[in-house]
Amino acid sequence: MLTREIIQRVRQIQIRTGRQVADVLGGKYISAFKGTGVEFDEVRPYIPGDDVRMIDWNVTARTGSPFVKRYVEERQLTVMLMIDISASQDFGSASRSKREVTAELCALLAFSAIKNDDKVGLTLFHGGIEHYIPPRKGQKHVLRVIRQILAHGYDRTGFPNDTKGLKAIAWPWRKRSVIRSPRGATHIAGAMDFLMQSSTRKTVCFVVSDFFDENYNRSIRTANRKHDIIAVHIVDPHEQQIPDVGLITLTDPESGRNGLFDTGSKHFRKTFDELSRQRHERLEKTFRSGGIDFISINTTKPVVDPLVRFFRMRGQRMHR
Image 1: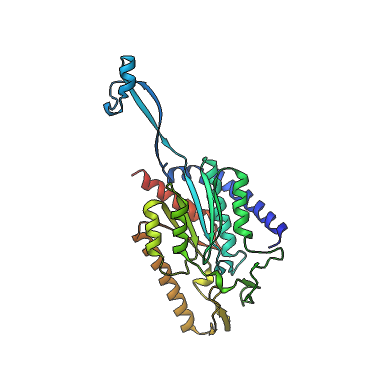
Image 2: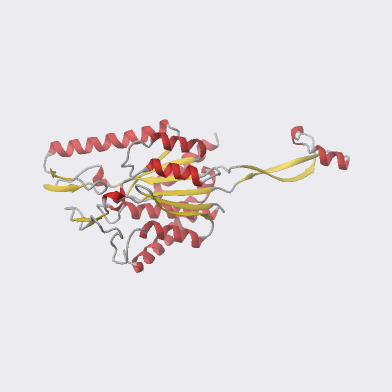
C-alpha cells in the first residue's frame, strides 16, 4: 500500500468510524466498562443516613462537627489494542483484507476510548513483538495507531519489507494475495507475556487475531486474571466455506507449506466447511470457559454491528 493510499484509507476510516462512534457507540462504550477503582474527591458535612464508616475523624476532631469523605469512580481506562499482523491477516476474498477490517475495528474502539478520555495503546505482534506504542490520549495519537496497523511492515511499493522467501499467489477468487515470509507465524502466548510485563495497571486489552496458533490458552487466561481480555476473531468467509473453483494450490502463508486440492469435490468442501465450523465453536468455547469475552467479525459484514452487540451485552452484565 503506497503512502498516499494509506493516508486516504486512514481518512476514510476516520470519517466513517467517527460518525458511528458519535451516532451508535458513545453511551454503549461507557456502560460496557467500569473504571479501575475509586479515588478521594472531597470531605463534606455529615448528613443523617450517611455511612458512618465514611466519617473523616481527623477533620471531625479539628472542626468539632462530623464530616465524611466523598469518593468518585476513577473512570479513566487504559485500552490496549493487541493486533496480530502475521501473514494470514493479509488475506481477503472480497474487497478488504482481514488486516484492513482490523484497522477499522481498532479505529472504532480507539475513537470511542478517547471520546471518553481513556488512553489507547498498540502492540503489533506475529511470531514476536513487532511494534509497541505506549497508551496515550488524543486524535493524532489514534490516527497514528490506525496508520501503523495498516502500513507496518510494508515498503512504498506495497510489498512487505522482509522480501526474503516471499511468495505472491494468484488465488482463483482474488486477484492477488501478498504473502509474508514464514517467520511471520502467530505467537499469542508471547504477546500475552509482553502485556504482563509492559502493563502494570489493569488494562482493557482487545486481542485481535484469526487465532491460527496453538498452546496459548494458559497464557491468555493468566493475563485475564490481571487484565480484562477480549478476544476478537477476524474471519474471512472463504476460511469458513471454500468455493468450487476446481483444482487449486493452497499455501499456508505462515508456514510456507502448500498442496494441491480439488475444490470441485463435494466431500472435500463438506469436510473443509465442517472443520471450519468446529474450529470456530472450539475457539468460542475455550474463551468463554476461561472467562474471556469473545467477538467474531466477518470481513464482508459491517464491523460496527458485532461491536454494538458486545457493548450492549457487557453493559447489561455490568448492571446486574
